[in-house]
Image 1 (cartoon, each protein chain N blue to C red):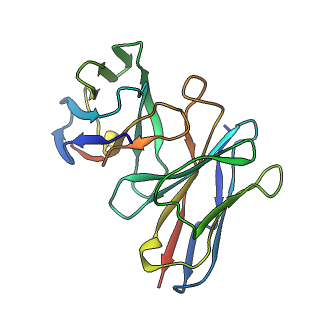
Image 2 (tube, rainbow over the protein chains, first blue to last red):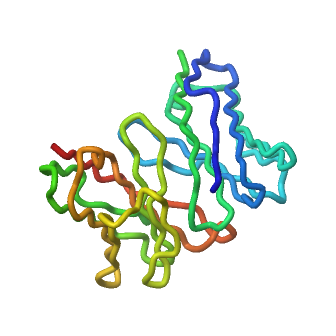
Length: 111
Length: 115
């Protein structure tokens, strides 16, 4: 099955700096890569996703890049704000029925 | 905005007891899922359900687990004989279709504590 690895497990940045979280996957059939944000005690919520026919996607301060050859994808958050503090999970799916999640990155934005 | 709803939000049970967690997926969604998150760990896939049957399940979803859609709106996860290691947050999720047609929407979760 698919194996998704995520780094780093924790990340602290100063407000206004950029944050980058990286994930690798093992199954070359995976073609959908969502990122979820989970605030403490709340449900994971989709913040951005990318499909295998696209190399990069941007939504305001958030961007995701995908390198299918190397089997890795990354989340970039620019101009970080305290409300960006949360746990971020990457995921990969090939079938759309089963999503494999990374181990999560706890991001702390220091005001 | 439509939401996935789950009940109960928290359940405490004794080891060996049966537990049923309930979910109401978003009404026009076709795919339903259960995920588990042990405290501080990643979200783990348990099972997906489509067209009134299981479409995929993980190795975690063994014989003590079952899912059911007893009516047109509810989707339930039953754990027959709970073990201590079943203590976790259980998330229900739904999607409109496959990866090409929709994102995964999660419920707020049901926290299960097995004593």
